[in-house]
Picture 1 (cartoon, rainbow, N blue to C red):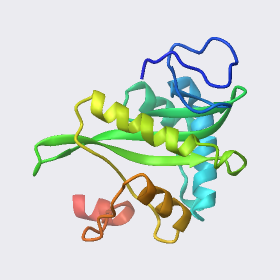
Picture 2 (cartoon, rainbow, N blue to C red; picture 1 turned 180 degrees about the horizontal axis):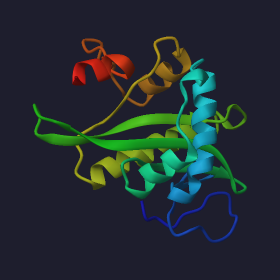
Picture 3 (cartoon, one colour; picture 1 turned 180 degrees about the vertical axis):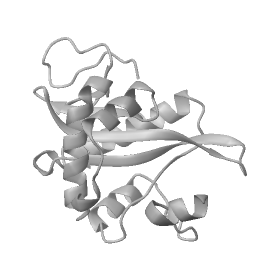
Picture 4 (tube, rainbow, N blue to C red; picture 1 turned 135 degrees about the vertical axis):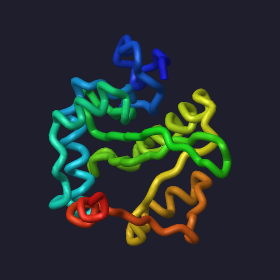
Length: 177
């Protein structure tokens, strides 16, 4: 994602800015963006009615970004972070190939319907292809009809035969012994 493009005619872009649409810029997230990432992830969790589940700290994001456990993009309007897209690499033993898992995509409500979400997914698709990945995947809550409709418009297909499972907390500790 080393394109030097900035939208909206606001002058030279940062070295890692990528193309969006007029009025916003996408750029790679850096560890120093940890506070903004936390703010946007908390806003996403609040939107999903899961705000009580956020226990991450800015330091957690700093470490994950510094070690590249997660990567992603920030959308900015006039220098203010208004959206986030976070991903990490996955691997399928069946396919023998890797993919990108998009963990979070969020755009502040005031900045929706301006092409930021589409720009996030286009940039993630480019990143996947440039890195030799075979797919991009993500989850969506079943009640989020606007997001699901958008995903269908961009060509995404739901994988209804799979259901997520999670082991955490006391159950994780008990199983680990």
